[in-house]
Length: 120
Image: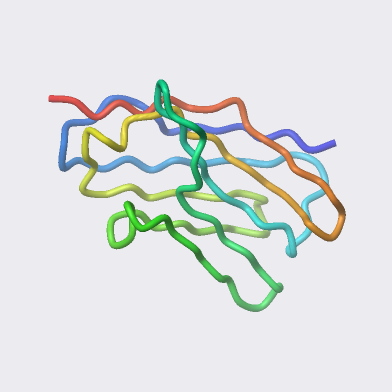
């Protein structure tokens, strides 16, 4: 069983930055895709960024709305995925969820979510 623990959310002013972290406990293989989703009130959960790995290289994917502002990274040795969020906008406010999944194994894990508030 895999458990995901997120941290790093909080209140930030527009234009500010936050860094989210998600540490996975349990067995995580390098081929798992790790990612971040977000859900604002009244909206569906949406993909923010994901990062796949083949053990040698990482492949990142971003929602158009965050390209150029957010950066996803992973540390396979620590089973941790990060989301650096810069130039935050009020529309980035949401609960951010960490996700780890494997299409090969048919597994899909979610964190409990961390609140990001962008307001002056």
